Amino acid sequence: MRQYGKMRYPALFGWRYLQKMTYILWIVLDIDIKIYVGSLGKLIFRKGVYLYIGSAKRGFRSRIKRHLAKTKNIFWHIDYLTSSGYAQIKEIWINNKAKECQTAKTLIKAGYNFIDRFGCSDCGCKSHLFFIRKDIGELKNLLEKECFKNADKDYCGWFS
Ligand SMILES: [Zn+2]
Image 1 (cartoon, rainbow, N blue to C red):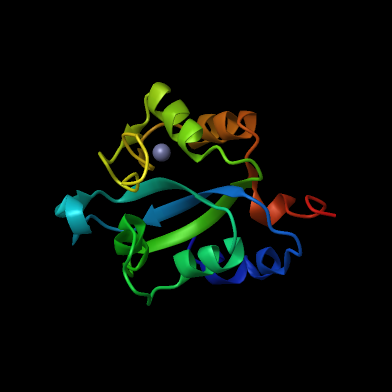
Image 2 (image 1 turned 45 degrees about the vertical axis):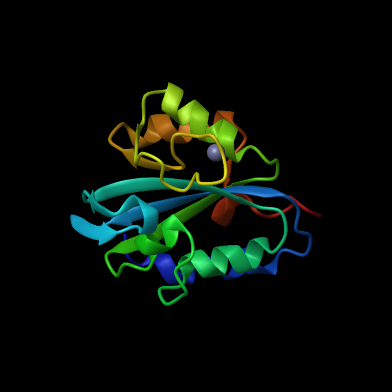
């Protein structure tokens, strides 16, 4: 799975029109790790698939580039995870409506495991980071129902 990390996203950075975007990072963690996550303290992350939900009003491209970068100034909770050499962003799903918190609530309601208080210092959500222990196909169906698309496959024509 490793091969897709760096090569797949150049097209993503070619978007001409940038609007409010909600994005989902599909992060695969290769091993169990214990990392310090700012105000949340030390957390154990089990090997597996994580989903992080974020949004950007402007500067969407630079936001995604920042998430993909391993070296960065740590600012958000997610930075602690994405800067780990064991964590790889495998896919990025997007939605051109601002519904970040709504999506987080939908996943919680559907019974997905979440990391308490992660990535939601500015909103009332329980979490914006999910640990996926359920069927991936089922999850993709749920997100497609919420109008998310895999940016790699479906970016063409969105803004033309
Ligand atoms: Zn929220």
